[in-house]
Image 1 (tube, rainbow, N blue to C red):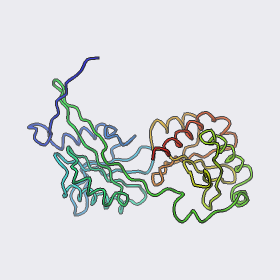
Image 2: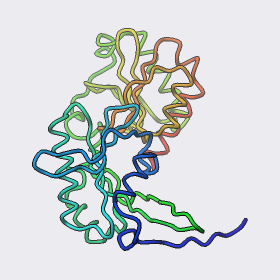
Image 3: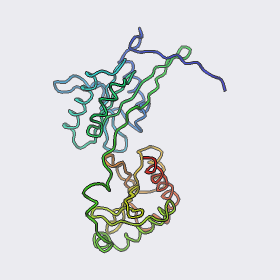
Image 4: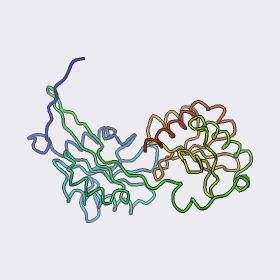
Length: 289
């Protein structure tokens, strides 16, 4: 394998490259940021009394939007404030979407990381470091996420812990038929851990291990179907795998980082292999947290 020596450039001090050039490259192929399957919604978007937002991106399969600000050189306070301000304006103007602030800079400083730690979790914020690399007569851009969005507390935390119900409650709210589907999914989950049991909460059926919540998957039985919700990172590969299996995949729940899949009677038997894979992956991700 031939080794290639790449030369790192600082765009801020380059005589021919500038922020507009970077914007154009991202606009041509937004996927290079590593945010998933996103499309360009707007560029240089005018903000009322607040300047222009560099890029507005939207997830192709959900109602998630990214307000992206680009900074050449090192992060500074003014760009951080501007990024958050544009995010706040957009989320108030379009509350039907889930909004995430994104700052892209050539140098994500330690001071910036310290500032982010103060409010990350309250403000959905992603920081991406950009490196320009020269090879022969070409220049490429490499984007690395150094601060990812902190997910909110899990479904099994706080007030819902006290709102326990029983199987008869869910048989009335759903049906005996869909409760049997929850039993089938539990048996698949037990391949990950044989001690798992169903835990009947007021708003969902979760899983418990030795009496403690283990909600890497949850179930919401309805009268005619059951909604199966594995907690997994949103990825195009997972989305395509589920859809190619013919499953009814709803919008991804960005708030709780869950896929939402509507299962009809017979779907579990016909798609046991892919459902087993998804449950296994959700279990492994929960153990990595």
